[in-house]
Image 1: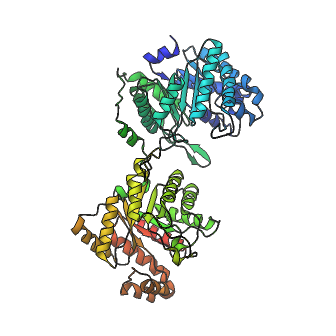
Image 2: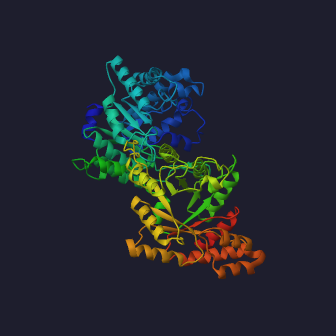
Image 3: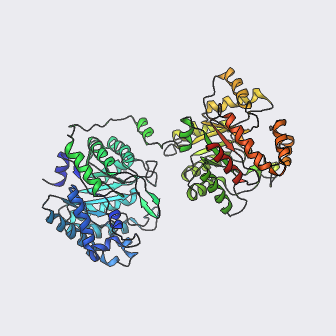
Length: 618
């Protein structure tokens, strides 16, 4: 019985990670793992042996990077054939010594270079490089070819074509597994969804359609469902990572334990997978638990695949809500802090402040966009830097002023591509008050219009004109709310317009009286019913008497009670200390109606805000 016939009647358990195990043996990631087939064959053989003893029925050769392009980085480009054939010979010797029926799959990974149209390597060059490696694997006696961990459909097509050409030339085509990896949003790095990928691999002639690496079993379960939906009669290969990797003490760690993989081995089997195993972070322990689960739990005759309507599949593939959104929607009390982008190129002070706030317990950093209409670094660039370098979630201030429809939509796509998911829609400050009063001040959308465009357009996968943008965005959208407006009826009218547009949360202007919230919200409820959206109350900590007098007398919409002003005045040089106390007291008092706070540091006093956060979180 050949490989494909076996896959029609049984599920095959493949091995786990090779690189993870080699690294655990003390081999650094700077080394050429593929060369170990020649220089340290015993290390590779020991890993094959451990997986076979754990119950694997298929082992993959140690040739993931054994192509001409990757080997050239180590000066080994002329050893492609030698390394690949040595790897197959090594695996087969281990299998023979085990006295078990175990398949040997020749492993083929990406070239490590971009091919046209996204790179300079032409398709025929890529195909030749793949063919060189695959021919060596086939001639050495591999039972099948596994083309895995690809993220570019253009590249994997050339690999499949090369494998088929090698098979034709030898009059003995080997079964081809073609496996793709996905990002956190269940798309490839080039934006292709699982259904498109599955159809493309089928149409190109892959015998088995695969998904590997990516995230953990939960993500690959979602992806497998969609692939099966696209190719109901296909054969499927699934090898998940042991969760998303984390760096701990200079080491790469994977969170998913072996027992967790045992449960998912059964799920993958019932969902139609015919080959299951593990990828990065998995070990012989993971494979042993999967073997036990598969051997002790009877198989259901018919794969339990629910054929979903297209719109339900799309919903399944959407991202999970942001931690900020989850906290607000679950009734938690969120703490958000505003930060201004720098006026120049240096981000050192900003990152230091963001780190301090994150360590203190801030849930999210709000990045203002050109506050007071003054020229500053792009807010979405700052969000990207903060998220990457500090690791704290951000909210992007997104003013409509100064942007036409083209600019608005282009900037939204850019923000989403950078991983920004929370946006706070505002009108923005008029340019007349800033550094460039003569600058264009036009806009095509008011805030409620932009909110509608995002929530009812982009988040459903279409732009303002109704044209598809490829996949839905996942923006969590906030809007401004003034709890002490000069015209209450107009504010309530605008609030209701934003609610109908789809606003997810509201951020208020600074308040200093806890009763300000209930007062306006009760007026709104009388007209439109309870406001069922989270409200973050604006908190602007007071620093000294001069600061208090300025805010009270010169900033529209801010009213500071007499008692508060007296406490700051009596504090003298301890004004900052009393400012912290007043902010903490106010925050505790508003928890009965607010879902969080939006703290605005004054004069870059991030240490003051950190103290407030720590006091509130005690």
